[in-house]
Length: 372
Image 1 (spheres, rainbow, N blue to C red):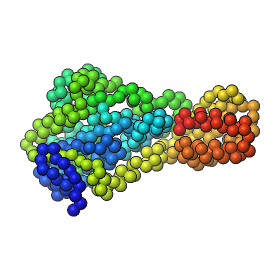
Image 2: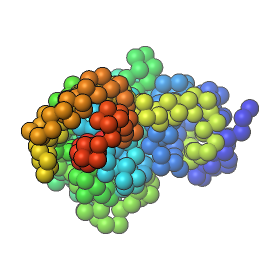
Image 3: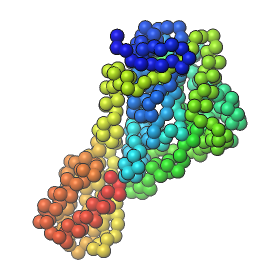
Image 4: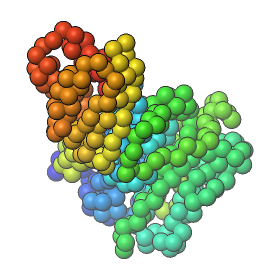
């Protein structure tokens, strides 16, 4: 059997392969699992494996956090939800979930939790949400952050401000997944910096994200850290399952990549095609006045490819605009810097390499780059 290192916090070493495989999951123990990885795509792949492919016979609490990332829902449009240019410049990752929901910013100040419960281990499938929310509320209570309470269907608030949000999934007849985030010390300015651009003329079939008032736990108590919260969660989880044996485990990313199902999911969901290409059809327009005329560029995008476009202008060189519009009829290139470069190069060839037209194209390209 493949030996994958898995270090227990308070018990002897096990192999990760035994943990993931049925022989260990069939044991009588409940597990608290912590990921050492800060790669959200890897962590999501691990969570998916645990929920979709492994045989979970006893409850698991999976604790993890991620480096700077924007996470969007399955049917969202990254060019609408995010400032992709700033993200690329600042090294902020983009990840797309396989589930729905809105766009959120995460960083190391944001702790993620995943409760995986076999239906037989919770009082009923109808209240597994409350069953695990009790763990979250007990953990927050032990940290002394004031009165934390449930709000609406998915949130936990303190002093009327959101500190945690959750989502849920049910595998009928098998298990439940309750996952969410806890705000420890999230960089709020980064969220405003990379989310929800002012894209007034964008029309999309995707789902708009909803802004919410949020608060970090460090704003209440500046001694709270990711580690302290995880300790509080572990203690509360043990109290909830006090009649069972509980193992605390740390997952090694390097060795988990050797598990074929996790590695395959990671490879699929880290591709540009999945993160950007799985985008609903949309169109947008960009407008700016240059010293040679007013320009409005309209582009239609589908499956992350520019399918068509048109330029409107009061430019005194109508032949130049005609040539550009001819190129934009069916470009069929990626909606990316490289894709637009292919369009720009073709426009240059079709305009005969004119120096004047070349300067116009530089202006148009700079305008397009504001959004791509």
